[in-house]
Image (cartoon, rainbow, N blue to C red; front, side, top):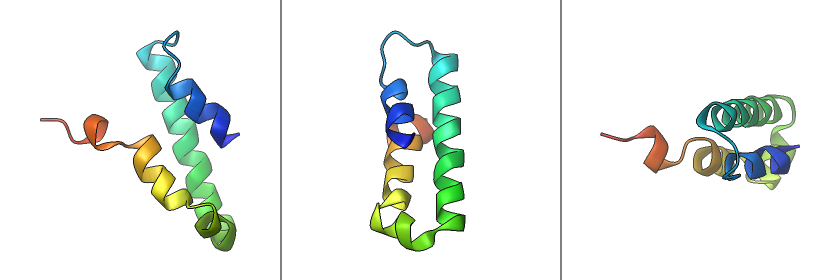
Length: 63
């Protein structure tokens, strides 16, 4: 499910609203994984992916 959402975020056919919706859904999914199965989440490097996929520096820290 996470891979599908990440692919949606890079799909050039989608508009900003759809990309934002996918980003929010991915963030929710990752947060649930971190809370419900920390060992699995750490094994899959969910926290790292959360930082790079959901909130990359170029999108979240613009001037």
